[in-house]
Length: 225
Image (cartoon, rainbow, N blue to C red; front, side, top):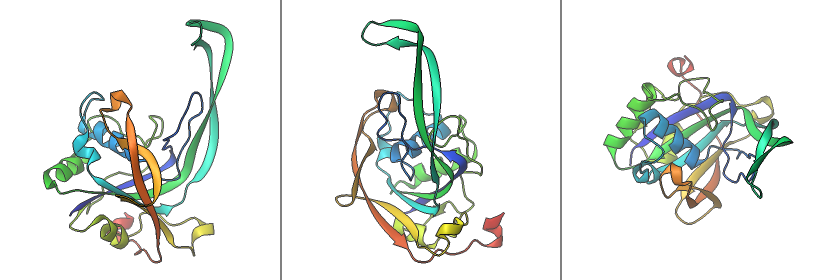
């Protein structure tokens, strides 16, 4: 089946899947819910609209440059107290927020519907709404679309042969490149599979199988630009 490739690179990205209360987490790789949310923004699809067609796509991630997991925080005053339903103007809440610094990912989305893949590729070139990598304040530093974005290959083949989109960090230069592929029954469990419109905030489990690539092709002169 063909695969649509995306480049997710930015000074800051956040891909939370287990955030609770005031703390916002981030995985070390893009979440499926986050990537599909980005595609919905490109398409101009409202949060109340169905996402079954996007959720059916198989996702894989190649980690071309590992991000540094960092922590920031926000403060808010006059927050609502759930027990009383009233605002406490003297109360300040600190919200820890994790994010990835200086990461670069090659993401693949595999599916049978070529019409859908072409529609997504076109939307990424002319998005309906601004695109962000996990949070609205984290815009991409490079275009998400690639010149050769739709590959006539399976997701594992496409991620193995596409040229590197960013150099590795110095400490990882001699290490293999990490790969995370969605799998029907094996791997780590992630609760980031949309099972309803995003407005419902309902996510089911999916399996992600980790692997490595010993060699990734270096970028050509065209890709470097």
